[in-house]
Image 1: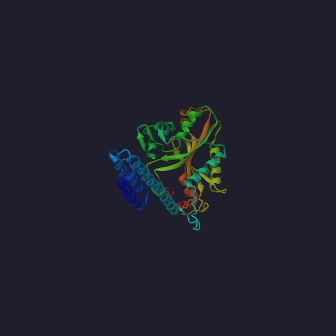
Image 2: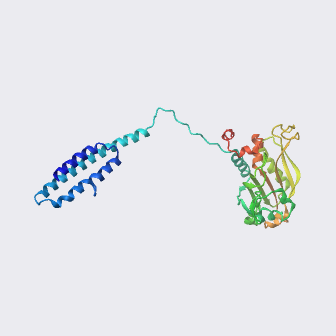
Image 3: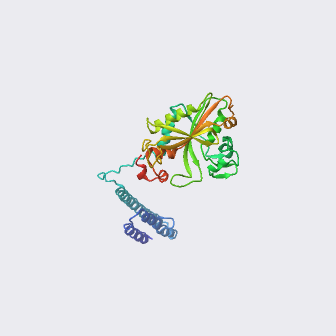
Length: 340
């Protein structure tokens, strides 16, 4: 047994020098010092020794175990140090290399224009209201004087979720919701920016686009007040010398109704291809709030009056920046967006 222990020690000391990783050392520990290792197998034969030999063999076995564990510990520290140096070497940074400048983002032109519209109208005392994009048919149509089977519904191809629920086709439903919430409080003076949805998709239309709705209800509100507000908006948005023109039109929720044009920003009203040689560009629809809409909102049309207007943010943006294709606003091409 003494000879077996000496041979085991000699064999193990040669084999441990071949270990190059922590996994190799772990395998070595299990092979020689584990519960089923070679040293344990030898010591199981101690029962056959005489009482005089057992202490001597036990001492020798402990010396072999201590020697191997000491070498294991030393080599483990060496390998750990090498692996750490290798890891640090792989992660080191060459501080002499030129830096990478992070790209700065830009505000989207639609966001720029929406914020500008909000600032203009807040400067005139309007507040901002919001409403759900998934809307009830009642608020989207019926509360705005567009009952079921009304021909005006054909003007707004709609995305219906159920017979009574749809994606809102304009931001006007927030008018009805706000009147219900505020009645009989006066004045009601709000703008409503937000997304709307219609079944349309070409160079000048998108199935999702943005609108800003405006509503003012108070005593003695006149058509001239509407004109003054819109003229002020046009001059702040497109330039101090802007002119506006109101043309008779039809909207179910206003009476009388008017389309609003501004003098062409390209030719200054002289006439060009952009304005179809008329000198005018259409920017929004407007009118005095229909008495029926006031009644459904809880206001007495004999005591109060109001006006409303609605504009497409994409159209305002295209006119302001000279963009000729609506799809550019939704393609997220950084070459386009960097211009703003």
